[in-house]
Length: 200
Image 1 (cartoon, rainbow, N blue to C red):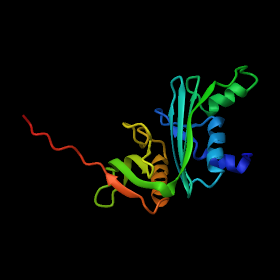
Image 2 (image 1 turned 180 degrees about the horizontal axis):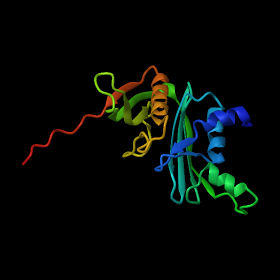
Image 3 (image 1 turned 135 degrees about the vertical axis):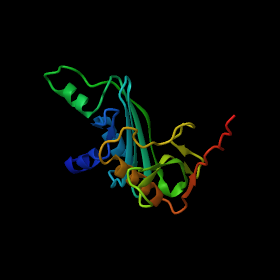
Image 4 (image 1 turned 45 degrees about the vertical axis):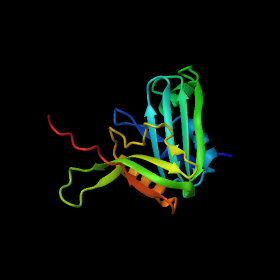
């Protein structure tokens, strides 16, 4: 399989994450090849990615095609290892090698087997007044027919970026909408809030 210029450009819109500095960071090339292998370069309809910059740098990407949800996680032996750092290291003037990489997880599951979308919260845009204010599901997880929950960790959910760059909210909306559109059997469950605490 060859990632030509056009698919590479398409992937570059999805293999990007917002850091704590509200800057967009492009993913290293290893994520491109893994996502391409899992999706067969099918059109991506929604995506979400996270970037943890301290050594080992950890990249996670979820991508949704019309038929599958795919996930890739890599660790890189270095701080702040992103596409720019990788390009710098490949520059002969730097005389550095790429950071060591470790594939942690990579899979694709058919969306038609997704049975339940769970949301632990609703993010409301309080800057708009009245009933037309924007909102979006947050803290989401997806459960499949075989009992697998994504993300796999019991205490983890997929979250909107805490420090968002421009376009992050729309990207998140596209991601959630693509998951919802992928399965005719998908139900939605909002997590109930705990009871009110009676003041002592």
